[in-house]
Length: 120
Length: 106
Image (cartoon, rainbow over all chains, first blue to last red; front, top):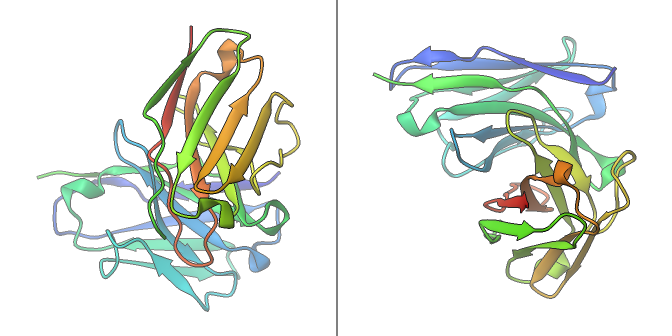
């Protein structure tokens, strides 16, 4: 069963850090690019970051560039999103998602999301 | 990636055709995909590469892309199609989503 499971969300203070994880199963993780997408309460989807299958390239949305980092451990089938210098507008559900070449590099599988709430 | 714009809302009667647009500069030169998201659920891919449907997506969902506008069309719209829909143009580096369109079936 193809699956992505996010973890690590929580309630944190502004300026602090959090690390999210995304555990994959049921597909060849080592050949797959993984994205993070977030959704603020009542708002639309916002693309956050992507890491290539081998970790050689990483790209970020301007809103998080310099504050968030992304990494992966292919031996653990896991991608990590490090959130630093958190702000109130980072409050959102964070989804990890699989890009699939069979679908023209569209995102075809999404996790259930993990909630990050930044509040003083 | 440059911005893409969607109408905030579209309404359609059951059984009628719903069209949702996604506009952006030279959008027709890039592949576009569409996602459906129902309340409390993760998004679902309904169209990729402008007009292809993943298995399991009903034939009533179709797409097109030309010029500056991509369009998602739902023929014979059913109440279960009520959801938010997002377009996303392909990009080799950063990605963006349209702002989303709330489809109401009434």
